[in-house]
Image: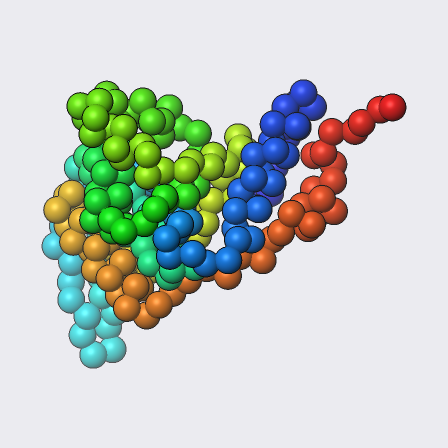
Length: 227
């Protein structure tokens, strides 16, 4: 069944404004001093095998029991720079304000210490706020980190504008869906290895959808101006 969504007419202007802001950002040329990063999160169940699997043999496939043991959940954080062909992926027990704040501090201080500003695209989740930095760090430290950020929020119902979703989809298909990951340590090890391999192969994202396309294909979302 095809999933669909609608936007209340009174919110169309807000949706369009946020969409065009992100699309305009994606159209900008690569600038290493002002990198464009996309950020997203994904919950993951931690599952282990209830019974030992039977290894693959000549003429016989790997045999695994369908029953599993649920060991809780974790949250995967994905940051990717589409034009820079770089991504960083990590997993934490939760996705609290403090978890997000520490991820942003690492991004600023370790991945892009020389950048003038990091242009960050993400959804408008309640933890994805500058206030989360102030709730986690002393004021002077929070201000220092916040000063390196230029945040561009995707609109509600517009998560498809976030290129980090493309990376999460690739991670899911290539790493997560292929096995059961029983604990946080295993998830961290596997997603980190996946990210390093993808970075070494210089995988980027070729975004083709532009503002001019949106104004034609998504014309129904644009407010009608009555003179």
